[in-house]
Image 1 (cartoon, rainbow, N blue to C red):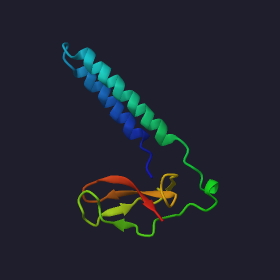
Image 2: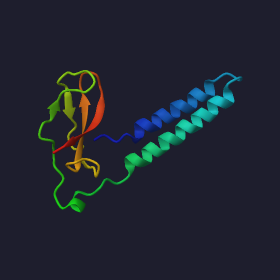
Image 3: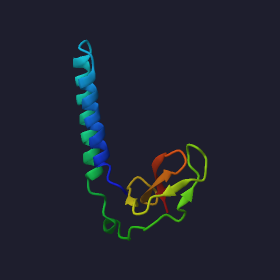
Image 4: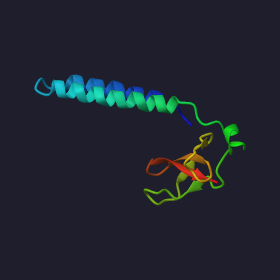
Length: 116
């Protein structure tokens, strides 16, 4: 799975630039909003870079891929929801214990899906 930290950093920089473009009557409010959004992006980057649960902690190896690598997209309903190779991770909330990252090639929807 691609690292999202550069994308989030770019968004953060653009938010700061947008706050600087605000008119004088809304400048302070824009700076406050930019600071809040930047803090939220910082938290997201920290979570994204946090170490994943190790598969050896579960006592079984991490699966390499889901059983079905292509499925129906939950948004556009086309069969273009593709598994992103190398994106399997452990998830304590999932019944199977694992989930994989899928991306729709039609509408660009992205999401984690439980795998068995």
